[in-house]
Amino acid sequence: MTHAELEWESLMWHEFVEATCLYIAASYCQENVVQWLLDSGVSPTTRCYCNQIPLDVVGQCHYDAATAKKVRGLLKRPPEVPKPPMAPSCNVKMGTEEMQRKVVEEFDPGPGLPVQTRAKTITEPVQRARVVVQYKTYWLPPGTNFEIRYRLREDEDWTLTQTRSTSKTIHSLLPENVYVFAVRAQNDTGWSEFSQAVEVPT
View 1 (cartoon, rainbow, N blue to C red):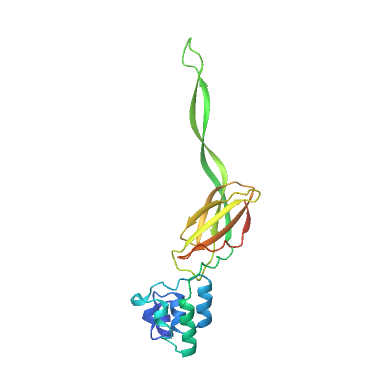
View 2 (cartoon, helix red, strand yellow):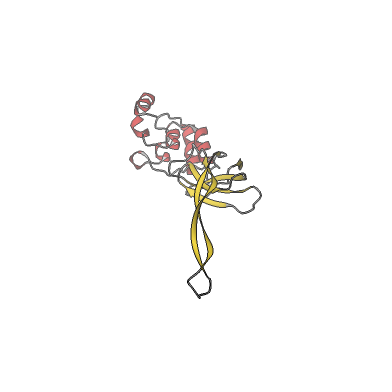
């Protein structure tokens, strides 16, 4: 939200400029929202305005004694691993990449000498696919660590790669094949389960 939108919503708008969803939900005593965020793996110890955590501001914008007690109880429970990200969406792009390979060739060193061999590296263009993998986790903060795993559908072994973005481009995939992709997220407690896997034809 913009500063103007926050100012319209609350007299405490200046506190919410850099606040997490959990911080705002706690300040309004929104028990159901707080529970959903915690169930999804949102950290209750992320510091926001004036180095405060959500537990410090329970009921600050809307106070109800019974609900505030429940919200404090939720915020004091042990943290959980994140909820898995949504199933990734994948866009395939075809192109060529320069691939290097070594070849051995024979050459004539001169009159009266035996033919010899030498290795050299050649570069040639090959057709390859790249897949842009995107996924959504509205409940996790920017900078969350994600791990993407992918493999050919008929293979058993996964290739793993990590990123702190909600999208990543995977290069050098074989054309005319089907790949399987899934993603998971990490917080201070540990890794989530992997998301639902998606199959992507190249």
